[in-house]
Image (tube, rainbow, N blue to C red; front, side):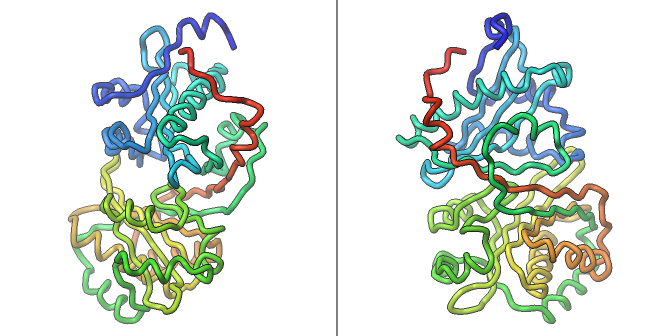
Length: 334
């Protein structure tokens, strides 16, 4: 590392008072095509006891942020977002900043949970080759490929059409704690999930009762089908404001076409009951075969406008425990 750079650099935890400095730095109008969740989630990141939100200052100015979340009681962690000031992009600072914040994050995670995380989960845009170069020397394994599609729609009209769709599609029920017995059996995970992992608003979780409880308490709208003894589908929904307006994310885990349509319809109905005006629906599917099903259903049946912002991501996993054995965590000096 450049010693001059290190002498000018400070790594610290973000506070609520950093909001404006972070917004000024974070490229809100271009990140995720303008559908940036950071303004809506900033204060939640600061307050979340399972999240480490770090800032890098260079000569006293915020130039980099790194948000990491602890998962599964300390067994794993996952990045929430990283940003760097535009003036420093392309100048070789990324690895220096990332290394500094990652060491600090892992040390904090050990302090929080009493153990070193065993696994690192990362979602990586298949088109962002610049980000892959940051860690192309790490032995990541791809667990799955997910597709995310964007549609916009005015929530006020056409509610009758949604009701008609509900009547012709499989029945779904809002998740209740007693439904966990239909999700935990291996029959569900083996058939629907990638090694027992699911994704909610870009974030990976292990299917467990504590994780489901946490998502319920966070206000996530969760739907499951009525099949017994094991369910065949699961979905998660939620909403936040972005610079381009309201986004409602729909994260669908299933392989059945009719169930996929049912989850979309029920989440759109929920969005209509909560909001008026234009909504952008961000629909995620973990089955490649369902991508065309979603587009056809949303455009031809629901008459949504398909936006040109679709992305494919790989869900990659690193055996962090073995990788880090040769690199023991020391106290950060920044």
